[in-house]
Length: 77
Image 1 (cartoon, rainbow, N blue to C red):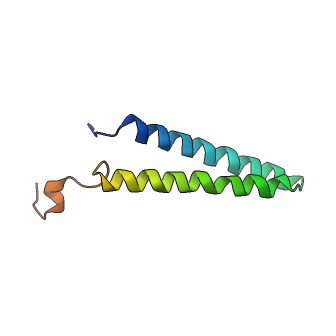
Image 2 (cartoon, rainbow, N blue to C red):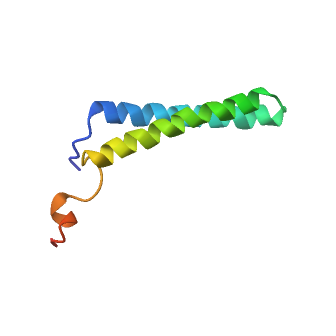
């Protein structure tokens, strides 16, 4: 698959997935204690979620994801 995904989009995806995973895991582990830090870790999840939404919207807007233009026009293979 030769998709023209830029390194910035790729880095944004990786960073946001790592951030969401780390903050979600931290929130779950700190909620077991229970600790106020669990709420802070859960709140820290939101910026990473917003980041992945922005990166994916950018990718869709610039044609980096989705069907090729020929399929979008209604033509078949």
